[in-house]
Amino acid sequence: MKKMITVILLGIAIFTFAFNSPALAADTASGAKVFSANCASCHAGGKNLVQADKNLKKEALQKNGLYSAEAIISQVTKGKNAMPAFGKRLKSNQIEDVAAYVLSQADNGWK
Image (cartoon, rainbow, N blue to C red; front, side, top):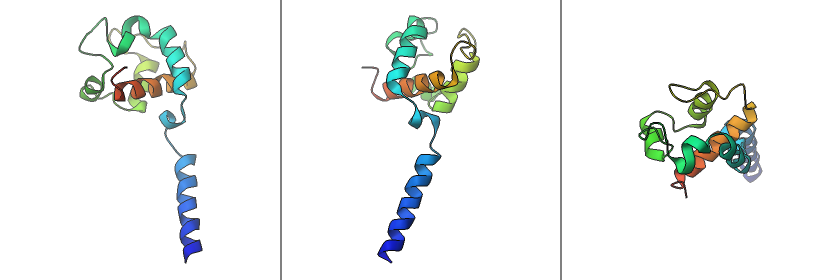
């Protein structure tokens, strides 16, 4: 019985890691570099120099429906309103890394 529980738990762990979201697999250190080179001119410190209320702070991301890796990836890839699309300038893994970085910074208050 103990062996069966161990096998089940191991299976769950393998399944979880094999099918995790892009943000979990992304590299926040790489995301920080890509953000610095491409996003910081408008979003330094999680701010938004164009539209102050559309910043990258956790509360604003939640309010604007952007508090997920998928939403940030879509926004960065396609752009919207004053934000340009980066889908042709950055590789998909770079955009995933930026999304992970933005979420981690939002969770930590952009410190």
